[in-house]
Image: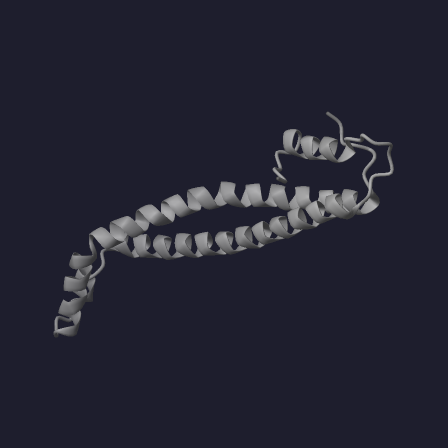
Length: 144
């Protein structure tokens, strides 16, 4: 189904912005899910071993000068990866949230244009229905 040609200029522009925000939102979620999964698994491991870390760190403050007993080299790498993946997930989530807010805003504006913009065709006309059907089937954006 091709894009309806009877759309107003404003609706065409808002549709382009809506589709761009929808694609960016989809890309963000595709990156956020693996990053969140890795960060979540690392946090589960960290919280599962929290008692061992607290005991080792408490021994440092009680006078044991052996700091190497606190973290092994592998755990040092683990904590760096944990911090980096958590930071990446947070940044991607913030970016996705921004795209999601833009998507909601454009969706609302498109619906307002569809409600206000009078159709210049003879009645009964289905150009607005054809537009809603096109954007849902071809582009995967649910307006309603």
